[in-house]
Image 1 (cartoon, one colour):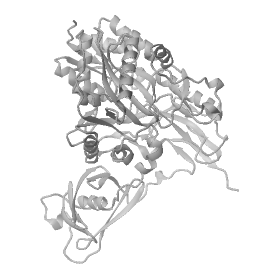
Image 2: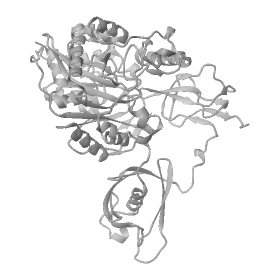
Image 3: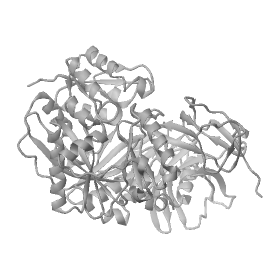
Length: 634
């Protein structure tokens, strides 16, 4: 038995905070590492000690195994937990940790190596009798093989994945997937397999000790995905026949035993519409969605990882599961704008209810450009699936999140969608429903009125007439304020005596109470610089005060392509120079930000008259990248 005393987490954000929580409960000292942008991050503030990794980009910091090991030794840690992402599935890093005399909180390097390449893993699983999709050679693919899914052989998280429905686009997709995989994982190998339409992503959590015991801890459904990255996960996977569950459990245990696995891991499967399972990959680490399994089995998987690493034996069988758990990933992103990541200050993050919230942020923190934009994981557990889904949707709907556009409204609508409620889940959910889920925003008029009333109110102790902007009980002209929200400008005209259908009951800078068509509504208001945030049961709104005079610098040349976010230009279309002809929708530039690659497309057919971006260049939000002069209409 090994007796651990101090743990370094070779990671950042919410997973580092979550691991520290368990480490403290077990009496372990905690050591954080941080890049320069993360110097004041929550995981750094939360640890007993922290070591700086000079630089900002992951390649210079969290992906530097030598610096991580040096930090562990300098801080006196005797164990390293890799979390997920970064070097968590890097066999060489695991070996280096062990060679330095430290305890590795993960599977043996040989098991990581065996599963590191999806192509080699599939060969191993075929030998173990685990069901597989037959690979397709891109060089000999025919129309009968379509659609195809291209996947990076290394890494995960949806990087290096492309769906190909037309052979004419196969080479371009292969090149793009390979380039993205090489950038993300240092390995450009890509393979192809049939793309299963309307398939479900179902996985099995496994846990193995060093004494030969392997647990299969139920199933999880992770079918709701965007860009091949999970958004909502739940345990157990709903609607699976018991025979299929047993098949998945047996295959997962066989996969673990095939590589002499130890610790926590996940075996992922694709289940077709007619119930046939196929092995996808094995993640040799803790999964982002592990809390739903913890809730259902009443376990702490991180604590079990640590105990297994110390040499403890698991009981022969796992505990029995109870109830249902659902997790939603709250991202700083705009689903209506191609899931565009958001950066900036997070002024408020408050999620009510009896839900679990795993986060790496608190109010006042900044979401930067270098890392994944996930703000929090919100988890609800209840006796039934319907109750868990309802509790999670209610908590997210009542949350107050100020400063950044998020996917909160999408999550609430997804959880309340009839298909989700009835368990009709597959990986095409957002392809079918995204327009519905992101359209039809709640009417901002009452919230805009509340914002205006709150702005006009100097404080709760002043007389009501004074609090409402010096109103008098005589006829006068309405007061006017102008705001923008979601790209639309609104003018609010409010009168002290008459406002059709609305009666003002109370107004302070932070809380406005209105009676709307006979129904009393409370509007919580928060001011920050030029922004006003209004939250109520009718929805959440962000209003920007419209300046009295427009800023001349806001005007841009027609056809200007502006950076939609801060990031790095990773590619410029081959041969693209000023004077080049372009066609509408043609990819001109590729911008990488927050672990995602975004294409900058030509807005119209015409001529590229200016190109201000180059490969490797870092650009700020709104930076002018290029200008396309539209060709005259015939």
